Image (tube, rainbow, N blue to C red; front, side, top):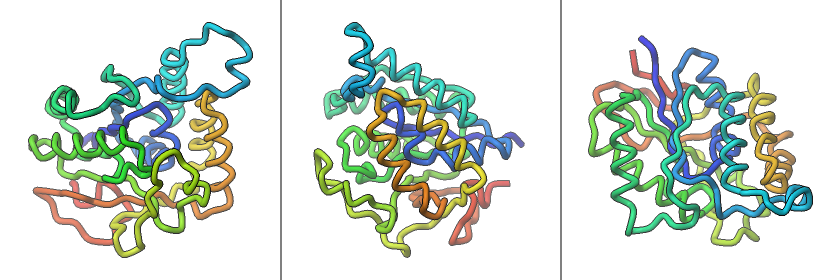
Length: 242
C-alpha cells in the first residue's frame, strides 16, 4: 500500500520551519506527500539583501519559487497553491478555503493530514485559520485516518517569541504531545530546505541557530483518528495504519 500524507499550511516556509524533518523522513520511507499552501506569502518582508539587488522583485513570485525548491529537497511530490492572500484569511473566505481542502482530500485520499496546531504554533492568525479550516475539512470527509497538529513543546519555544508581532503561544507540556519524530538523520535536508527561503533569511538564520544544538525531535498532537487502533506515545505518523 502506498502511504499518502497531505500537509496543509498557510505560507511558503511553514513546511521547512515546521515539520521539515518529519516530511523528509516520511518521503524517504516511501510516503507520497502533497502540500497545499493557502497563500504565496505576499505579506512577508523581503530580506534587505534581496531588496537591494532589484527594485522590481515580486515577493509572491519569489516565495512561490522558494517553496518549490524547498519541497523538492524535502521529498514533497506535489505542491498546490490555493490562491488566498497572505494576511487575509478570515470569515469571508473560510468556506472557500474549506472547499478547496475538501476537494483535495477526496481526490488524493490521504491516510494522514498534517497542519499546524490550533494556536498556529507562532500565533500567526493565518496559521490559526488554516488549522481550524483543515480540522473542519477532516471532519467533513471520511478518507483520512488521522489528523495531526504540528506543535512546539515548552522547551522548543524560542525566547525571541516574546518579541513576535502577536502573542507567541507558550508551547505544550510533554504530556500533551502524543507523537515525537526523531529526524536526526534528516537534519541536513531540513536545513537545506529552510535556506531555500532566502527572502526570509532573518527568520531562517534565527530558527536554525536555535535548533542546531537542540535534540532533533519534532512534536505532534494526534487530534483525531478513526478506523484504526493507536498506541501512545507514537514515533510514526502512520502508526496503526496497515
